[in-house]
Length: 325
Image (cartoon, rainbow, N blue to C red; front, side):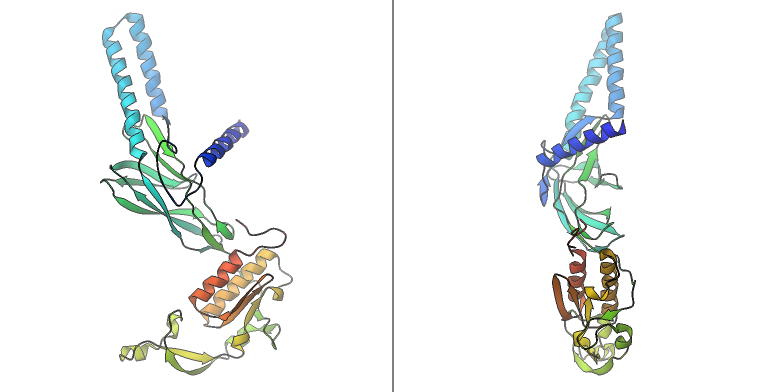
């Protein structure tokens, strides 16, 4: 039974995917809105059928009138339930990078359009949902929808699930829009080996010893991107502006985090270890580079450099398997 239901669900999902491909923003219309009686609605229709049979059997005009009036109420409810979703504008927002094993958060921008919206439930399928009310026309809200980031790579989440049974709960109206979302998932940082560098003239040297050999060299004007902990706050308090402290690092211009320095680890463990090394270098204000089999990132430091290194690790494609997506 479960296998049959799974096959039907897969066929329906494939049909929806062909009908509504991913896009950055969209408007809910009759092309991407679906409506069916809810369980309460099915019970309501069964009750009407019983009333109709009773009215026919006893030729009771009062029961006939009540039955037809309730059925007309059901038909009007179809229009109101559909209108509660129709015309909503959705736009995919940014998704901040995360590490594998964490929760990614996708930003969804909702615009109510020309009418208020009541009791909307929004979320990813088989995940927690948010109840949203847009009480005025053209009201906008931004939602952060959580989604598990289990593996590194580019994460494209499942379709967003919007549903509503407003106003009477007799019908359920839903939509499965596909938004063009992607989130970069960095490898899970794991310090599986002590940090070593493949720098010229210091092949395989222990980075911990080199990190502690920094000597103060002087002050310079603060540059955007430098870590805040390097700012000389005493000078700032005296009104001298932002000044950063600089240190001489032993052979720091040749500090390289190399793929080849971890030959005994698997691909994913190598990436996790290199990720942990990069985070540690950034924490200690070191200048470092990254060498992967098909990519080399030159020596630098700062937040932008760390992001570039982590992104390269996240999107690394091994010859045998490619990235995890």
